Length: 203
Image (cartoon, rainbow, N blue to C red; front, side):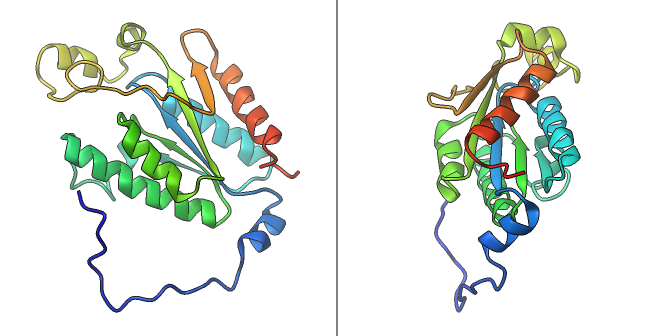
């Protein structure tokens, strides 16, 4: 889909509350934790666990979950390559808004295409952290909490990532979490350590 701006007679309005104001009040910087990986790799579970840990630390946090967003904002989109692109474009914009508002926002989306993830990164490159939730198709299939892999193998779900549609692994992710080897707690610790190391948590 085109990125061309069709709106006319619009003007950008500068904020009276600055990014630094929000950082000072929140006690931390805004950030985008972009969790990407196959279905059943553990993206949502880890994103929610990270959110809970940061919330207990007093941080402003939110999770944008793939399935949840498709119930509302993106309910008009399917799973064709074009719709997947638009799905991620919208989420990238929403995540950037949350980040600008001072939140540490986690996104849990398969987001199978590198080019789409790169576009999301470009919206807030200094605050963006790509987290590759690495897990093989074989291991994901053994979990399959929604029974999606079985349906995909039976041909009941077309264009299913990892089976009948491609997944392009990140080449330079800031974090790689191998959920076939690491526990949820291990993954949370790795994410928090990254945020501390990068100075995102000032507390």
